[in-house]
Length: 64
Image 1 (cartoon, rainbow, N blue to C red):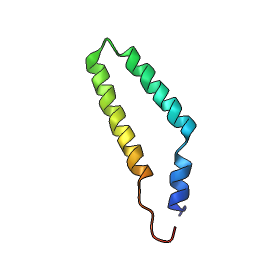
Image 2: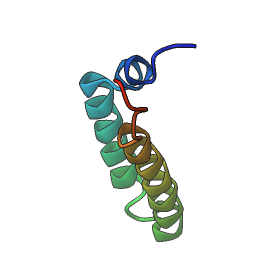
Image 3: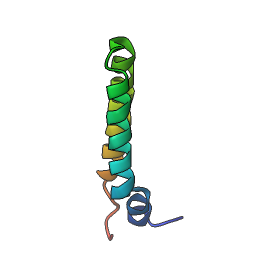
Image 4: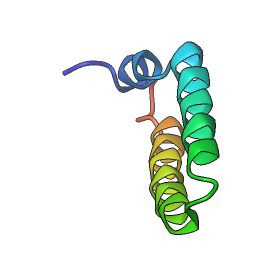
C-alpha cells in the first residue's frame, strides 16, 4: 500500500488547481444568464472543493 502522504501530495497539483479554477470561472460566466443552472453548478463545485480540502487535511498516521 502506498504511503498516505505520498498519495495525497501526488494527487494535488497547483497547475491543475489553477486550470480547474479558470474553468469554473468560465463556466459560471457562461451561466450568468441562467441562474438556476449557475446555482446547481456552484453547489456541485462547492462539494468538490470541500472534498479536495478534506483530502488535503487528512491526518497522517503517527510516524510519518
